[in-house]
Amino acid sequence: MVDLLFVDDEPSIRLVVGDVLRAAGHHVVTVEDGAAALACLAERGFDLVVTDIRMPRVDGLTVFRHIRQDYPATDVILITAYGAVDDAVRALK
Image (cartoon, rainbow, N blue to C red):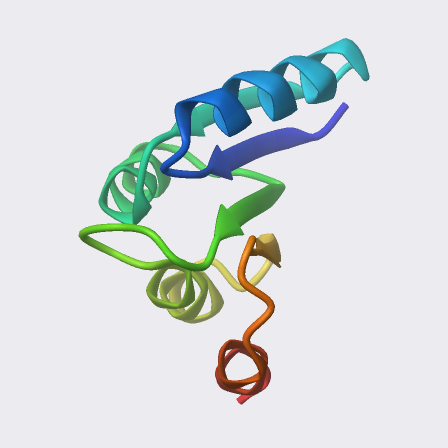
């Protein structure tokens, strides 16, 4: 079982993906944006964070950088509905 944080600003995406991951046997916490994700991370650790890149308040790349710096053992998967090359390049840097 993976302890997973799923971050997306679309409520329907959070609901569906959260349900699928729970059905697969994982412990899943869902939050609506990067600010909520950072608050959640400050309270407890996760094995994996799956985060949308484009969100209000705090974006997924900011969450990713914070995790790499403060929680290097936590794996991160970045997702987006917008296939922008510049987002991919920034994530790789």
